[in-house]
Amino acid sequence: MDIFIPPKNISRICCIGAGYVGGPTMAVIADNCPEITVTVVDINKDRIESWNSENLKQLPVYEPGLENIIEKTRGKNLFFSTNVHEEIGLADIIFLCVNTPTKINGFGAGKASDLRWIEICAKEISTHAKGSTIIVEKSTVPVKTAEILKDILNTRLDEKSFTVLSNPEFLAEGSAINDLQNPDRVLIGGEDEASIEILSNIYTKWVDKPKIIKTNVWSSELSKLSANAFLAQRISSINSISAICEKTGANIQEVSKSIGSDNRVGHKFLKSGPGFGGSCFQKDLLSLIYLCEFYNLPEVSKYWEGVIQINNWQKKRISRLILEKLFGTLNGKKIAILGFAFKANTNDTRESPSICVCKDLIEEGAELYIHDPKVKATQIDKELTDEQYKKNESKRWHFCENIDLALQDCSAALIMTEWEEYTKIDWSEKEGLMLKPSWLFDARLVANINNLKKTNINYWRLGNKIIANKGTNY
Ligand code: UDX
Ligand code: ADP
Picture 1 (cartoon, rainbow, N blue to C red):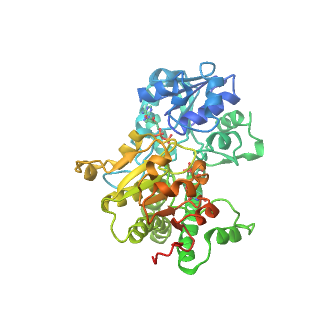
Picture 2 (cartoon, rainbow, N blue to C red):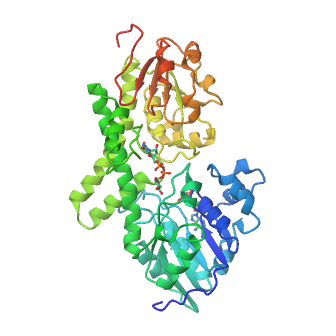
């Protein structure tokens, strides 16, 4: 294992995991490297079938620009398959893009990452790989995971050899194709310089060389966790300020603009909202916190815990505010929820702030009418149906195909995702659908304010003073 002789020609890549990371990443590699055959494998048959679906609208991941690339490459040098073992055996490079969720049980539960899928893959690779193979960690993993991978791979070295590289993904959902095509940087961590060069040569087909950062494995793994922690921290920081704005009469958009105008801070990631969601931020923060605890750094772990605490508090304070404005009871009241995805331009609902707020409102007796242009009713069902809600005989939420159905006879509407179509709602037209007094709670600051001013709708915009403008003394 000490001397790794890398494969001479890279003609085949196998990616294990056909999810949000694996699918789009491999599509972009295949598009830029027509000489390489890229196969994405998954144990989930349905997912692979969807990736192979004739109808491109049925792809399991919605990303602007993805359908185009799939159309160009699928069946030429991009394939989706369930033949995991066979493809492992054929590959020169294997990307690991499997899920690494937070552990639910046992030591480190609620914080540490669950590496069982990584371990299963490592065992399968050690059994089925042939010759020398470069293993690339793409999934976000705790620092030192490469060590675990190496230990497992080393158990079967009959005529095979492996090297492990860390090449974390920085794509954000909704802009994944652009992020992959025009990355700020590509990070490659490893020990074997020749293998790093091989992976780097794949990226330089479309990425400028200076953007490729080469580090040791641990720096690369830690950089990914830290990058997400820094981004999440910016969101919690601005969200904490949004609450002060509401108390004082300052305006969060103005404050955010002023802060971001300092070049050292910059404008990005300073949008106040209902709290960060998505599969990465919370999970990676928890993983970082666990790492700090493991290395006996309690002050550091507390610092990062604060970022999660503010995020949870932001979601709770929205639910509490709605309850307060609707006279302290939501029993039997219809509330329209506009947006269930964790952000716009994705159908992903993982850790979406909508989940937490919807559950709170249901708990208070509200009846929810949920609209989202991309999330399916079955997905919402999965997120809102936990043991507690299964006990409820009657379903407390309904899926609405259009905005009007959601708004019909509602006491309040709540915007949770910044979908473009919500920016275009003409509230003076919708006002008649809603019960009086009606409320709009805009947690994304997307509703057309001039248009709202012309209505009798009372409104709350995150990080702004409440406007209960129609003579009612709220
Ligand atoms: C994130 C990282 O951006 C990406 O680099 C990493 O690889 C994966 O995790 P993603 O979760 O897809 O990507 O989305 P992102 O755009 O980062 O948004 C995460 C959450 O933060 C969303 O809920 C979003 O609405 C929220 N957010 C983002 C804000 O509330 N305000 C902002 O200014 C930016
Ligand atoms: P991510 O957002 O990181 O891409 P997803 O959950 O969307 O995460 O996708 C991970 C995929 O990895 C899932 O489709 C899952 O079925 C697949 N997977 C997990 N373990 C294995 C395995 N041992 N072999 C093949 N596929 C796997």
